[in-house]
Amino acid sequence: MLIRIAEDEFTPVNGTPLTRREDATTWADCVIETAQDKGVVTSMINAGLVNHSGGGRDAAIDLTEAGFQAYLEARKEN
Image 1 (cartoon, rainbow, N blue to C red):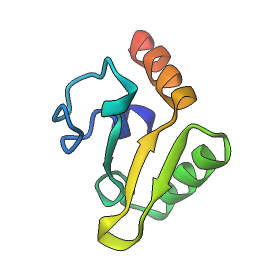
Image 2: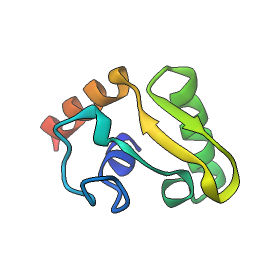
Image 3: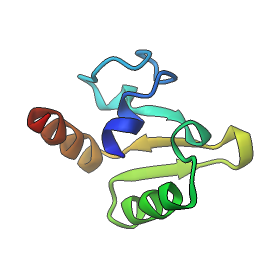
């Protein structure tokens, strides 16, 4: 899910792999599509890896610094 958020086509860098945490933001409804996705995101929020703000179609999701570091580690493994 970290990679899915960070490399969504609606990030400021249009889905390319990130080099800056500031670009790790997108619309929440683009990455949260199922109840399972919602559960994963909730767990990630509780773990301090992502932030979720707003509501409905205007809701945004972004990686925290800890989430960005975890994203970079996940990218190394892939």
